[in-house]
Image (cartoon, rainbow, N blue to C red; front, side):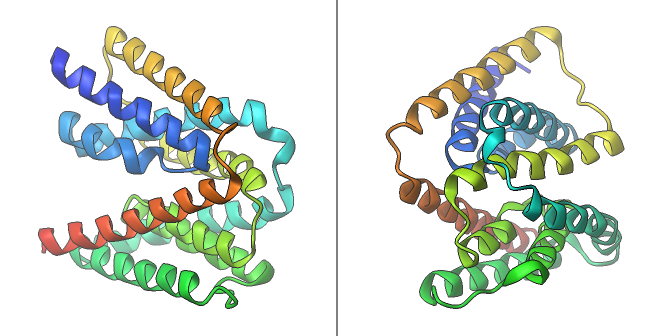
Length: 241
């Protein structure tokens, strides 16, 4: 990477890390587009997986007491089991068409959840299994696993503090599985140090902002990120098609 590219990527990593600390998710959505643009789709996704896993571990170190193991015991296995299915489907159906379908479905579901707040789209344990499976499927096919979990969190009135902590374990498991499957990204030591510094600074900023941002505002941020992710997936599919 050139110096300018390194600076731009570092800024996106900084912003993504702060977003992840405040809302519990969103690093990949904020940072991945520029990572993919600068270093290519394969290495860009690998780097996003690795950096997100680091964030998951760091944020979890300060929030682990709020983790809800009961929910994770349903969400994580369902997500991991759906990954092979998603990988197979992605080879059978064209990527643009798959993105259009997934983005459209999630956009409609999120809109319904916001407009009809008394309706639970993923109720109870069965809903958790369904949300986890859909999230894992979407993560491997379209690169966005957050919107499905957001739908579940909205419907089940998941407390924001517990949601943030639990999402670090959830996405940590998915990212670790991805890294074990695909390997680590190729990165020069100097660039890695710059990105690591940007990552830590972003987490620190996010930690400071959590003291002034209310749970309601943080939850609104989660929903906004989920909507952006759904729209981005839909538009990417339309443009590629």
